[in-house]
Image (spheres, helix red, strand yellow):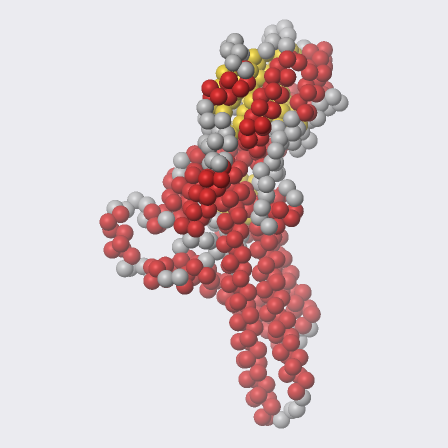
Length: 191
Length: 305
């Protein structure tokens, strides 16, 4: 936020950063080789649902835009308990999954939902279960940074594992430096 | 001005009037401390330094002062997971640092943001406001308060009132200067000096009062700005509007009472006489409810174009 616009009380809505998401596929290689984690083939795009014509009114419109009418069941839309929408996308190949998520980001932004884009979540699981458990890589739309989220049962998260993953990926992924922004996304539909 | 930290939701004119008196009292306190120091032989420059030091302390510790006065405590994500999740998400949407989250057990429906800058901010909600609003409305209120943080309203309002104080002090200095230039030393002059001293006091109080009214006007503008930014952040001006109606209307004051009895009860209150006129409006830190609702309706229309 610019100082002047704050002082005049005129802060503008923040547009998302979209391109950094493309650093995930190469980090996925490291995740597999170092930690034995592979994609679950599921990702979720989380945005704040808004009424009005600038936003796409219905889930159907979003689905049509995202799939270009190709209804192969790879996209579903749910609402979480905080009233945010989740577009859940399936694709077994990580690079394709990232490309689809980027496509969804772009579509939402072009339709005026950019400021309402919160984050996208990519699921990863151990290649050979049980392993050390699954983890989600969260992409924060406004900062263009990633952080790991490893939810365990009963609203507990494995912070040690998260920090370790961060240390492994620091070189190739823009990791969110402010730990206060590593928000918990309990019960998100990607898990 | 003691209420500066509390950029909150309550707006009733009785409160505004008491705030005006409190603010004026606070200014008088600053004046009295200054006068005492002067009697003790402290130099004028040092007095100015001490007074601005006090103002700076109010600014620097604004978060702690406001939280103490509202009997609020900071809550952890474990204690209040939902409140934290809401604020987490709003902060990430607005790309701003997350403030401390506080809860006050007061039944009065209120919420406020405080702190000298976004990195040292706190957002506090009372139990009363959480009971009265649904999740969407509470989120709208939080977005409004976070906008106050983003707009650095505590800093802006502190500087504004500091400028007001400075104007008063300069006025006093100028008048003292004019008096001392007069010279003379017999009894007659001494009684004149006493009268002049009173005149100086009166004029500087008037300057303080005018600057206080200007500060209040600025505060109302900041409220509208926070409404606007908050409504745009959540993308749903109507949620903020319904929260405002629930929290700032007469409903908020007597929420659990039969509405037919409200009118009768008013006779026992000190405030309605002021509330009906426009006198209250210029003392008020918050714009009238209708003005805020009108703005939100306008934003809603703009969004739907």
